[in-house]
Length: 258
Image 1: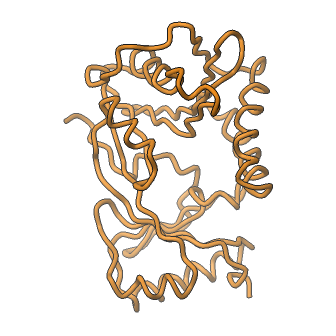
Image 2: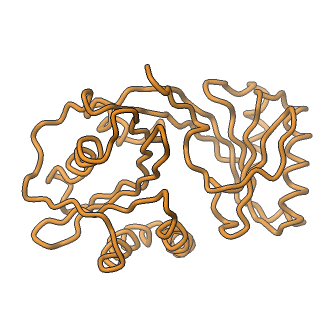
Image 3: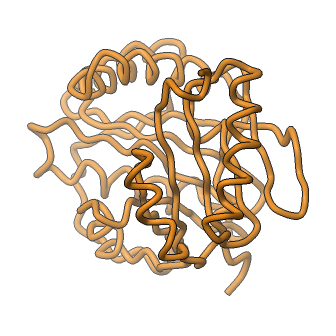
């Protein structure tokens, strides 16, 4: 398969601030509360003792830049040492597993689409439509999450490698997603369909537009799905292929600065 993706190909919005034999540290002080821009990518699967040493280094750095979270990503397809599970439970870490998927236009299975939908790139003229439908959904997850996502959309929108898409039905914005472009990939992120329109093939029509209208022959469409979320079943029905998994551990913690 051409250009087989790994999690290193997923956009993280951070810059490398340290790299050694054990980890790569990413930081973006413009968006300090964005976990996917401020974290450590491990180069191996550490034992408990090794992890605690790395964790202390991460805590000390986070304290120096006044951040309030810790996040660690494991390399592709490497699991946790069992002894870490009790430690993570005691220290209030949230453990996650993500799946990486890819697709090409010839693998896209969905043929029946909603022809009444109009898929449009977001510009200054309809950016408010994008904000409105996304922030309505984000607010359901709490004020803190709402404020964070609002900052992220404003940060992402001007980036040259980023494209926002909107789906309209009868001139009403009913869905959206975010694309990150690179030489080998188009990454899909932040897929949204308004709840009352989820039987209208909004998501599949947006994916069809990406795969059939935007994807270059040498590229793959890639995306990340939480292992426990139902959207991954939708992606598999579209024809997306599994590439790898990744373990994450993170927490929002006041003790970072104590």
